[in-house]
Image (tube, rainbow, N blue to C red; front, side):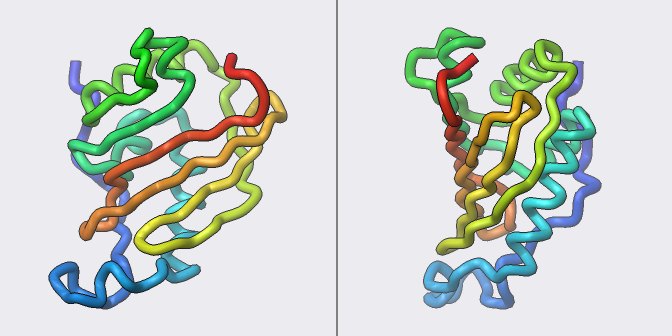
Length: 149
């Protein structure tokens, strides 16, 4: 079973500063890039298309969520790589056919952003994304309002 298909989502470029430049890490993510990423990320999740969701992430990215403890039984709450996280997200999508996100805010940082959204159950959530030089997510940490479940 192949979880990842070739990326058809345009890659996000981080400003015009080359990754090797000493100024690369010292620039705040621009609003247009952050908003485009957030809009596409929400649309990918709402489509329930796993390949489209995973297209935002580097192959070796790290994902952290309290749901990982509950669903996978991994006490650290962390998974690494598209294969492991993709398998976890496939389970999550199957468990929640009503899953739907509504974007509420996008916060920008240094090569990073936070997407604040309302979940299908009405609760709030926020996800932190650290982007690599290629514009793909290198690390992501999910945060939820209230108890997990």
